[in-house]
Length: 316
Image (cartoon, rainbow, N blue to C red):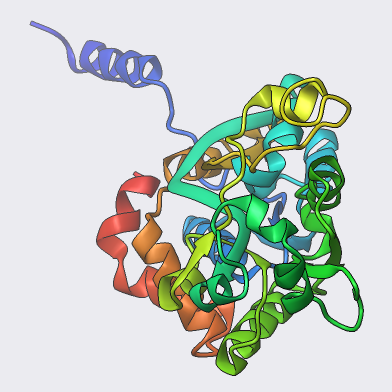
């Protein structure tokens, strides 16, 4: 029969053999989360940030350019990246992951596409759409021309820091267009909606998931299908001397993080890996912000309050 002393010793050794569970947060260092400036991405980042704040982490929301963020993540100046889309950040994401200093944290669960888009009534002045060759016709070019670009047509693009290779595509495919960059996603959207209300012909950059193509009848221009060689090898495609003579890639929205942060905040990184949203949810959240005028931070807070059953498994 064990003595009281022996029992106490056995209990003590048993306790020592069980690994201690790491306290959360593991560090009081703030986690620097990228805020890119587009309402949809900012809502995602606020949802993540506010959920891990509930675990005790300190957060710094840090503005950064969409493509420029990857250099900051590489050096550890930024910790959690705003999701990179295959459509415009495919090459930048690959380069960042190849360094080993930027982690691929999985996709967000939302398929994406973004490209040249037009409201359906534009087909009246550009018959042949969605085939891209309709954009070469003089009457179509004239209808899409504005004072800034005449006699060429205008393609209304997103903010210049979004990338997208629009100018390269125009040159490679011989399109009589000039690119005009909107100053922000809000300005881009406002110009599209204003044009639709006036029934003014317009070709502009939009994307899915997003409320504009969901709310207004329209189509994406149909280009030659994307292949990696289109961007990498000028000999690919219709123009043997120029790359980018095709549509943009479609794909997913990828989560990124500074590799060095995994050992500092392992639980916060685990939450980021688990976090998933869907197309319908994302469209509804962006609509609340862009159309109903609810601040993005408040949109995120409301979603967290109403969807505990969705996000609770991410923190377990």
